[in-house]
Length: 431
Image (cartoon, rainbow, N blue to C red):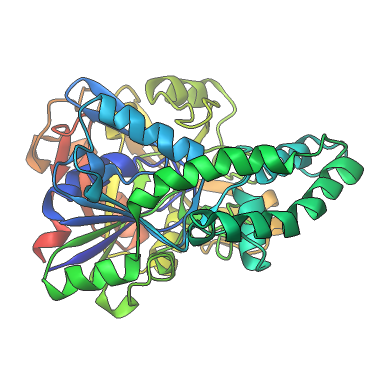
């Protein structure tokens, strides 16, 4: 038995969906433990592309238990649409395959309106949110005025909670954010319908996972976003609203941390970022555009072009430490196929001082300039490589350099979007 946590080791969009899809073959249960539909995982099976926003990527494997943990915030409309789309394509034939924890917090219409209005308000500092209502929902969760799934499926409780909270939200929308207020009855009618559908999937993540553990079944925890977007350990305030680091797997699922065996960090062979915030290795030039086009770097959820840059080992070392990474999965190696030389950021220059550790002061990070080491490119296609020895020596040198600088072994390398375009050096479920 092994319990493995998958986390993004950068600013998200690292290719976690593909890695989760591959590791799901070894797991009996796959758990999503934080975030909401602001995340999108893209999977390519054969020639078919699937983008999932809420449902764990393991749903593409028949017979796997897919669980949405208590740490997730859930937009019921998006969730139901995702279920319908999967069923149309022949997935999720058995509804018991999918479970939502009764304590997930529900994204309400006012959360989305507040999110969008704040981002567009003149004079406000933009965070670069997706406008999906994620942050305001987490605010209500922490403020103890949120509506949970267990409330939603009880019409009487739901009506009472909505009556208590909506006047405050409408006041904020109308008088401060200069937006239109929402109609209480309209929300009740819409969301009571969602509650009837969601009743089918309700359960207890903590109890289910403990049953799996006692049966010696393998559990895979699927993180969303990336370590540098963690609300505590990321580039605050340009972060998401949940705990994206490995510790979030325990709190977001009710699974004891001492039962976690491996933490695998997913990292691109370069770096991308969506939204606002400092990005030391960002390339606002032809090289950055080349990487963007070769890597199809556009958001799975929003379609926004991603900012691109060279690999940042300073930031990666931060992820290794805060997550306790036991291995790295390097994705999109093939995007660098045509480069004569490749740069790796090994430190930051700050006012004449060399920084080897990631600064936790956002004002310092803004002024940091990357210090690069340069290595030879491989100038050949990696798409047919299936073993480590199939890779050109220059590619192996690059991976070895990343291992040395980040002090973490590379356990998987991806050389294309398909499942078969993957090189596994060590399977975390095999011990």
